[in-house]
Image 1 (spheres, rainbow, N blue to C red):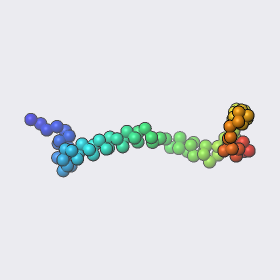
Image 2: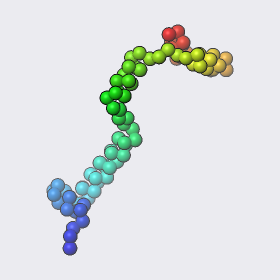
Image 3: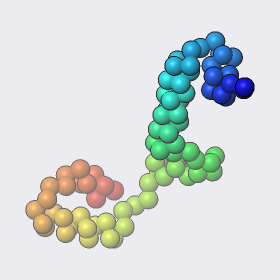
Image 4: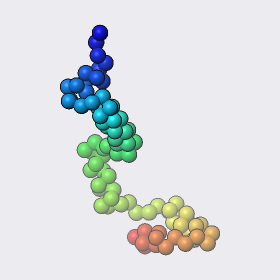
Length: 86
């Protein structure tokens, strides 16, 4: 009778089945988190992203219309003021 792949792998690594399974579950959890939370960009997209951060486009007319609407509605958007003076 052949052992399960998990038992065989645990033996190769010199671990108990429990230790191997806990480690495998932790690795799977970290992989799932990484897949959901890490953004991977190609070299071209990395350059575009950096350029956009270092040299952002001027705010559009729609931005200013929205800013005025929000301001008239009584909301405080002081954090938008530096953008409006660009």
